[in-house]
Image (cartoon, rainbow, N blue to C red; front, top):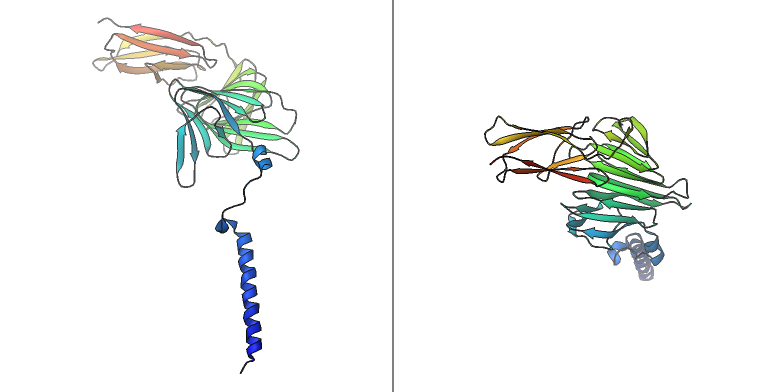
Length: 300
């Protein structure tokens, strides 16, 4: 028969081990003991972000969570800081995004979607600002970096535009085609397939086009001309007309509010129903925001 004193000592030792194990578990998994430790004020202040400094019209803040997507009307002061957070603009709407360190201001045009890919700060003070843009138009004015390791990039479905201090515009068409126009400075634009990536450096007053699976085109001078050559003819279908024309391929064309695809040489064509009021409105918009409206009148 075992000594009852030894049994008592063994029980106390086992209890002590259980208590120690419980403490270790609580330390290793704080989520089970009231959640993770709260971030300090210093950590919060050092977190990088982009802030909405201006909102006009239908603008949405959204966050892609693990289980669901959160979205609501955006407002001035909203911040996006982590992958999955973004800002989306609707028809006739716009928003302005400013970086936390004042390095850049970006203007979102209508029907645009911009989200965070990566925001970082290195121990030497260098900052990384990488955004995703799936559609629309974004004009960014980026001042020169004091740290040579800092960068500012915009990734689109077909390419990446990176700058170190410039004024440039990125446009993503519905088919994924990307256009990059440099207003001031230099922009390095990369695109291609897999490991076959090609980079073109686009200087001030020039633009490049990146189609899906293709490298950027050679930089071409941008003249900002909103003129169009138009032709309107009856279509084979009864009650319809064919509208075709030629514009500067860097421009956008809208017929009755609908965006029309444009070929690399600036040609477009569409067939629409005969307008009830006898008038069709065609709008040409340059990347700098200049617009020209044309009214196509038909006899009643």
